[in-house]
Amino acid sequence: MSTAVDSATGVATGGTAGGGPSRAANWARRAPLLPALLLVILVTQLPFVVTIVISFMNYNAYYPNETGFTGITNFKTVLSDPQARSAILVTILLTVAVVLISLVLGLLIALLLDRRFHGRGVVRTMMITPFLIVPVAAALLWKHALYNPEYGLLNGLLRMVFGPGAVQPDWIGQHPRWAVIFAIVWQWTPFMMLILLAGLQSRPMDIIEAARIDGANNWQIFRHMTLPHLRTYIELAALLGSIYVVQNFDHVFTITSGGLGTANLPYYIYQTFYTAHDYGLASAAGVIVVVGTIIISTAALRTVFSLFKEQSR
Amino acid sequence: MATRDDAKGTGVYSIIAIPIIIWTLIPLLWTLALSLKGKDALANADANILGNFWPKQVSWENYQLIFTGGASDLFLPALRNSVIVCLSATVISVVLATFCAYAIARLDFPGKRMILTTALGVSFFPVIAMVTPLFDVWRNIGLFDTIPGLIIPYLSLTLPLSIWILAAFFQQIPWEMEQAAQVDGATTWQAFRKVIVPLAAPGVFTTAIITFFTAWNDFVFAISLTADKARTVPAALAFFTGASQFEQPTGGIMAAAVVVTIPVVILVLLFQRRIVAGLTSGAVKG
Image: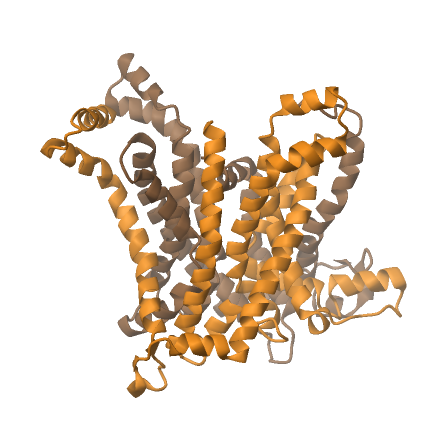
């Protein structure tokens, strides 16, 4: 198998003039890619194309006779509808808060796990578990096991520390957004930690050792050497985190069912197509999420490839 | 990395690590504790020890509820659906991605980087933007609330991810060894089977685990594209209700959460190193 492949490569590089055989060889080499690629494009891009088309249509299952193209009406509606506007604001708020908090926590934990101590392996294993737990189960866990005013862990701890007369807040009712934010932070901190830990461990230790011999203290090393080196990794973690947190639906659906001012754009979309059956409006909102994601992910891809260059240098 | 912070100070770090363990572990243990509490233990602090934490008498009534009792016709089919859908999506995408990643790692051809970029870009694609047309189309062609109707959209989650992770793994394989084996007299097939397969297997395996997690964790497709026949566990969890509308089904929900979490925890404990390698290679390494 490999020899055939190698000779094919030889033909291609030799016959740069681009005759018949090299083109055939080119196709032979691309053939194994095709099924997977076609499927990827089919299952992800086709629905999106349909989404774009529908987003310009008046398309509501309850009013089938009024179906037709309406131009940018749906987008105007989404951007002027107070509910959708608040959904956009909530999405931005959730994303920024979750990414910032989990980045700071993730950085602190990564700095700790970069050192050697007894039980480091155990701590690292514990740390990644929240990230891999079914998000709905994690959200239920926060809703019922931690936030519940009667038998939730948080109020139980308050009773334990301050006695029976302790304040017993209704966490979700009084602070719905923070309730959602902290549940998501719990799941995403490990992800941030993993990326930042990979960054920390790729530091050139000989240079840091040299700085230490030259008399730099820990804070100086962190401020002037570690942090600049980590910058790309922090950017990457923040961008990837944002891409996924913008789409968060599980926690919002489970913890508050989109109530109490926590409905974000994904929840708004779900409601619009699932209960209102307004496919046109839902698609327009979907396109807005995609545009937002594309802006973030272009930056993310650039960061990923700049990391590649750094490593291959 | 080895020379720094030798013995001194390691005890301090171990102590600093304790809050981290509490932060990650206590919610999980508390879930387990709640799932083992009967109705009285939930309501009455005296029936528990360790400051209301652990029940004095472990009760299996919540597990009975979801496996044999009133909630079993919701939970058991969901569990079966989840296993079928996620295994199928994993197998299909890992097989296809293996071919794809092999080609990317072994061959030099124009557009290679674009394929990787596409795979990565596609894996960023917001699921919620695909659901609206799928919901509409699936209902029209009869795929709504069926197993294949879930497997197909799950491939859109798992395929790009597996291509990306496998390509990263395959690029680190020393492919020259295959030729070295052939020089030593092995046939092409032998060289592939005895040299390349053992080197590639861990990567494929890791990819399969991460792919399976991705499918297993999905909620958006599960709740939008199913009604009750093909509902998977995450969607079923969201629809859990108690015996009556006014009874909080906390115990049952917690038991179900434990059941879907246990396989994850076991896999993480067993394959921790590989999963971390896979996650970070997907994100940072080339």
